[in-house]
Image (cartoon, rainbow, N blue to C red; front, side, top):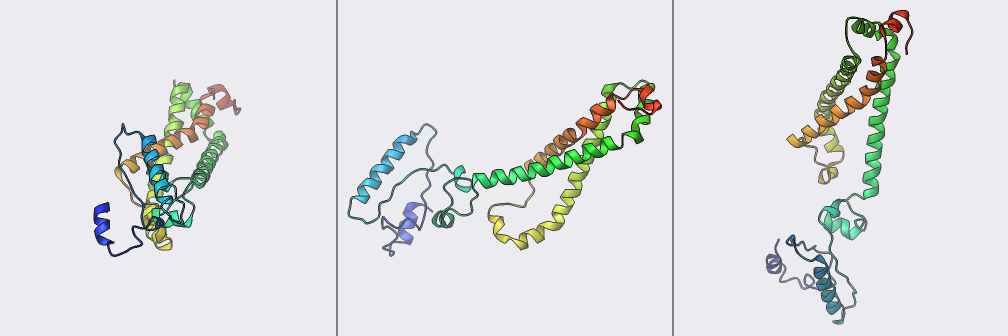
Length: 226
């Protein structure tokens, strides 16, 4: 709400306008792009010095914090800030969660790569036959990259179905997480997931594609691999 509205609502509350009452609200400003933030900080410091020297017991300092640093920020750990500013997550925890997600994705990619190479003896004659009738290394690489991408997209579709099935259960288990995480699919988010799935398919299929592209017809039908 605006400050003028707040003054009308809380005009009977003497503690609302008290200088030491910094628990009740936060002040948000929308400065112009060319605004000198250092000048605003200097004005806030002057206001704090004036109020602190007016005989108040509290010694309070005022500062600015970017809006995008409130949910993910270093200064969001106290009980007061958690109550006033809502849910928050420290950058360290965010990087830890991102690292765990990256480890899971990389493990899946390596697993797919290992399984693909382990099946080499079953498909080596297929590659040898394709090369014998004129297929080049580029065609072979594109074949296995396409297969990996298709598998990755199929996994995305399957995971989306599991997400729709499990979303009500996740929300009921931890409803407070809805304040930080919106379990809703938007068009931009769907596009990001598709691009991510394509990237995972390319990464997972790169090694098998390079491996099979080196197979020659002679080695394929002779039972030896490069």
